[in-house]
Image (tube, rainbow, N blue to C red; front, side, top):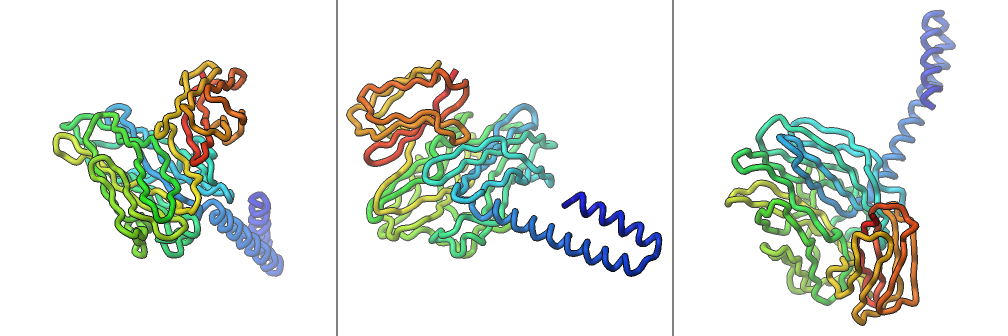
Length: 361
């Protein structure tokens, strides 16, 4: 279509030169229709890639001097072709960049992890708001009215202060989504680690929308007793979810050094209230062990009496590498023929699905 537009522009130029009025009119009409069609296609494509954001966060890692490696992670719905291959990150210093997706990971329960990474050098000390905005969230979020047409935004504050030393942001071990049973207490923890050993504090906040501001229509999820976050350990304690459906909760993780706040991350998370659990949790939350990790190919499991339905091994693209049923208490799997790299192991128990990373050397 682009080539046809160019050819039509050339024809228009020749028409102007020859002063053939009727030809000019026909070409202008044809060109206008094609431009409108192109605009429509672009609009529809943007709608396909947007409006399915479910959760996410922005983290950063200090490289040297004023240079940082910034990583945006957005979780989208795999039920549609969502997760933009190219996004814009605002660095907070008046500049931005279009960043290509570095890799994606297909996860259970229709979640896809989209990873974007870029290095950026700041001009000097200061406080910078790193942010991301996209036109819409996934549909049906009960505490965000008309969520499919509500902007999805993320914000992380980076403070560069030579007097306080170099700094990398906290990062999260647990995925930002989960399932909870209606009517029962639900506890979730991001399992946050600070690579510099800084102190962390936690608080509930509203999910962000247009211009990285709190969504006006946002309401905290309904609870029969209370919904709180422990300011010290980060536990989200929901007593008790009331109605079935999807809910988004945001927490602000503040980073402190020598009594000075040096940064913060707003993490947007999605939880589903169900009447039957198919919850996804990190394997560290169970008594199940696997070893060695990293491995050259052979992985051994100790299920400690847990009832296991199956084991799956998936690569970062969501391709199934291995599935094993009829599980023994001391199970062994072999991925010796698979290439070196990172894999995900999924273990389905009688109550939940456990997930962990596996490194193949």
